[in-house]
Amino acid sequence: MPDLERAWVGRHGLARHRLAVATAFATQGFVFIGLTTRLPDLKDRWDLSELDVSGVLLVIVLLAGAGSVLCERLARRTASAALLRTGLLLIGAGAAAMLAVDVWPGFLLGVGVYGVGLGMVDAATNMQAVAIERGYGRPILPSFHGAWTFGGLLGAGLTLLTAGVGLGWSAGIGLVAVVAAGAAFLPRSVTAPVDDADPEVVAALAASVPWRPILMVGLGMVVFYMVDTAAQAWGAVYLDEVLDAPSRWVALATLPYLLASLVVRLAGDRLVRRYDAPPVLRTGAVVACTGLVVVTCAPTWPVAVLGFTLVGAGISVVAPLSFSAAASLAGGSVERVDAVIARFNQFNYVGGLAGAVLTGVVGADELRLGFVAPAVFVLGLLVLARWFRAAPDAAR
Image (cartoon, rainbow, N blue to C red; front, side):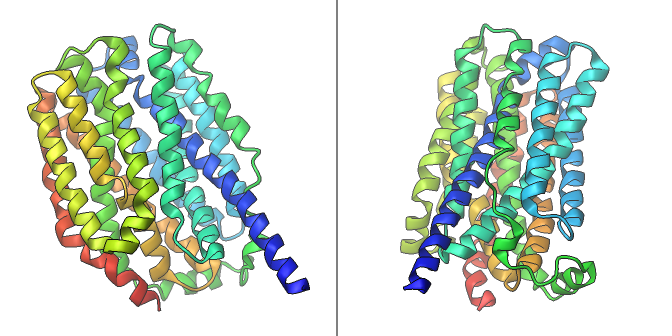
């Protein structure tokens, strides 16, 4: 009876931490989409060109990569829960500064703070999610990424509802991250670390990881973030400037995209159990490519919205399946998995860099052309999908 009671308490505690981590994912999505759907307004405030916007996005991606590396280093001695709280406070402060401050140095400071915080939150949320998934003993990572999508939907919806409100007032989205930082995240003591005081132990554990298959899975995540960032960072600008959508409707580039992503992610576990990961990924790649072709050739903004919706449905499960595969391939202690997840998270920024910057550079003269590159690269999932099947076997 005591064993049953301990098991019930453990599962109850995990459920509480699972809700907290899902809240962190949702908050990150809410703030990120709250910012990207306001890019047209920020572009007008500072009179930025497509290349200038690409430069700002480049800085955010590079600083996010640095924040993720910082998180990896600090995770050797600091619990991921504390790192997640710090990251949430940073993205809240950075987002508020970007939207509220009307002097250029202050805006750039906000960009810097947000970028570093974004990287820390990216790494720490997935560290927490993987640890909880291991505790449950079954795939639940798609639901965490579904929470991110749900938060993004709320962010896009808020932009639609407050289209006539000044940017300064919209800075309130940063308060959501500050509040979320107080959630009950998973403490390191629950995950029973081997030796969180010895960095050499962590380095040795990471050194024995099968990095080649993880690299192949990581390339799949690069493709995902290339497509995802191109759609989310440039979608609103595309509707606004190329297809002349009414300003109050430009957030529709993101809202249906996220809604389709949420539906597919919620069904992701069942789809993978029934059909296996490679067929799901290959089908999604074809759907996403079709959607990007529709976006590129769209004669009117409602047609482009349909294209973005197809893209969201096709590409959505790649990221959660990538993190689950990487964690399975890593195996072993929580330190080993944390080290792998933090490093694996760098693929996020490679893809984000390509999606944000390449789209703007290629589309500098004609933004339509900027969506051609992700349409081509997403077909790479047809080849990479097989590595997602190998992950559980390699872990065993």
